[in-house]
Length: 230
Image (cartoon, rainbow, N blue to C red; front, side, top):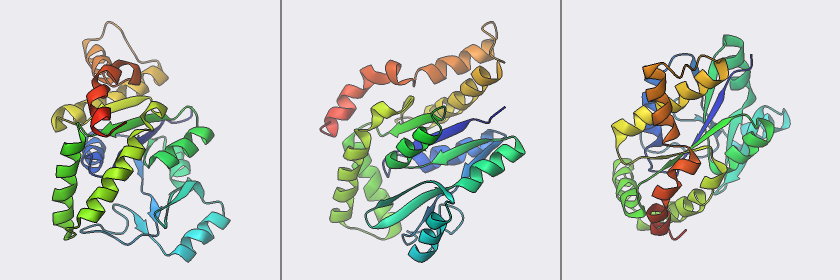
């Protein structure tokens, strides 16, 4: 049986990295694809942890060798998902988690339409700005220009939310972790046929996951989208 592929996207500062790290700690048989990029590391980022940092020449060589499932150029830097991570996950019998942007999501969905896509939303533009300012201070980059650019980029990214299967509003970290974990287990249960309507634990997972289905979360989105002028 083919393994599940989960795609997670979010604007910078939405808390995606924290959610992904917590998910990886608590869910077994879930491999994580670390993207390649030609941009420089920021703050405490380390090669092989947040990204594989490579030169533009190295990245373009990988493109020529067709080593990427998807790749794109953003603000003059390449980002890409190596095909080998999917192959290795399948060989181990594991599912694969992809942390990619909205461009990458579209490309992956074209190649793998059965992939499960999850978009992480901040609760408002003002809250995202607070988080970005805290991150900028931690990175030693106190620049209003950088923050405004990231906020403008966030608005463009958030406008792509209709492309995603699940929308998770990260306004309560613990609850968001529970919801993300539930989505993974819910989709596994549906795929494997292990879902049991009479099972209380399954019903709890299903409820948490279905809270985030795009159709179900839409009523919550209006004020969030309005704060980003979408």
